[in-house]
Amino acid sequence: MARYKLQPIDTTTWDNLVDNSPYGTIFHTSWWLSTTGFDFQPLGIFKGTQLVAGIPLTFYRKFGLKLLIHPPLTPYLGPLFISTSPKYVEQKSAEIDILTLIANHLSRISPFIIQRFAPHFNNILPFIQHSYSPYITYTYILKLNVPHLLTNLRTTRRNDITYAKSHGLTVTHGTLSELLSLYTHTMQRHSHPLYIHHLRRYYEHAHTRGLATILTTYDRHNVPQSVALIVWDRHRAYYLAGGFSPSSVRGATSLLLWECIQFCQQNGLSEFDFEGSMIPTIERFFRSFGGILTPIFGIQKIRPPLNLLWSIKHKLHH
Image (tube, rainbow, N blue to C red):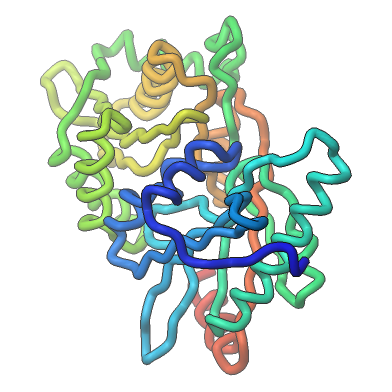
């Protein structure tokens, strides 16, 4: 393990790592993390002079503490690797040594650590070995490079899409104001926190880079019924945020998501990540589009008495 060293790197070096790692997402990029309002520090892991891995640190400061957590609407972070050996056993040995180095470093710099890793990253063994608590959430990832996507939907979802079209609903590119309006009303109805400032900044920065779009469902009178913000990277598209009118026509959101999927497929993307929810009704809705149930691994390590405060807060919100 002594053959690896960990040190800060500049954003250009970091973004090259994001581009070359199979686990790099749009949420790892320096421009995304620099818009969050959190302290962003990219760290590189070197073998000699060769950069082989890294991790983005995103700190939120509160009460004089550096909390190592995800910024709002940033679902995936965690370590990134560049493969340096074709042998599985060599890859895993290097990976475990590097993750052990990261686990020890994070424990030294923050008393409150919560990290959720990118899709398909599943090696959290070194964190467990160093007293981190594992957790798993789930998303649905739809493969877009397959035929007959519509027939793979559940019958009820296809019926809702047909119903929406027959009642004059259409989907086209929408506006930021529509997104913020319907998003705000939807979050308030369900007593969820609002991230208007973040949503606006993420969209503006991603859209200027050609990595985001807003799609809106309209009724016959051109009144917005539902809206979605989609962002993407070279791996997949992500349903980041959205909202709907409480008086929307049946099937408005089903039609919207179907059109989002088609938009992503037509633009050459290979996967669509619903950025899933553990809430049963939302999970059931996302599942009906035929995506693959995909576990997302995470770790946390919270020192006393912060762990007690976190446990109380978590129970109050469930």
